[in-house]
Image (cartoon, rainbow over all chains, first blue to last red):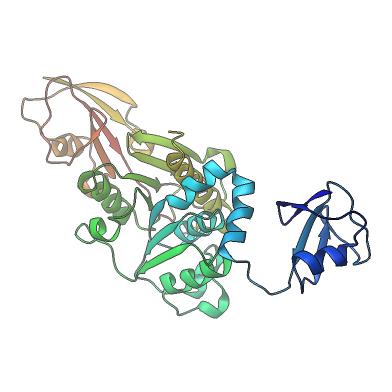
Length: 266
Length: 74
């Protein structure tokens, strides 16, 4: 009979228990999921069942993880995500969240650049852990991304970006995400990409501080190769600090815009 | 000559969204910015006819100049 094992079709003999299927297809599996729920080893398997056989603590091979993602994303979409190279300029609140989102969907290659280290005050919104305080952000983020998907190629640059090094560092990228904190750095990055990097899209953010309305954050196409996410006005300042929820909304806009550009939706 | 000036986000406060402007031939984008009471540092992105430009760009008759601020936070 035909069943699904870890999202792939498999032909098995009738009348087997979950444990017997696991022994045949994934010896050593100790977490057995049947149709979405953990099940006892002696449960009998029926035609059309969907099994997930997991060995606790074992990292899936690249091929297996890719197959799982391709099943979620559809193969044509996933192939294009896997082939993409995306740059992220600044890996604070926006950049670290964009990187996590893109790594989770298996973007092929990420080039991340930031000069800074993780500080305690960053933890209210940035995708770092308390034991990473004092580490360079690019190193800490690369570690975290590896724990999410070790098959995403992550290239790190611990550097202060400027108009001279930006085109070189992000040369392999078709899209660069502007994820800086300071307004002058945002302008530098956007203007450098538009002026010096022919054909490259830039996805910027402006206006995401505080706890203003969710739906005032939008994504505007300001120019053919420039998208800007945010409410355009909520500047980070005393009394209107940056907070994880609204930063994540803007970062989600940026990450999804990257996906839309990769998939030719824009 | 006449240009069209488009302002975005905070630049619209106490100004306008879009307005025709009569300017001398050879005017640079920077002159328009200063005329608005803005500084160079406040301008995030400059577009002329939808294409990226610098503040040194010299405007021509019937050009559309768009000025975007970028506010801090990330």
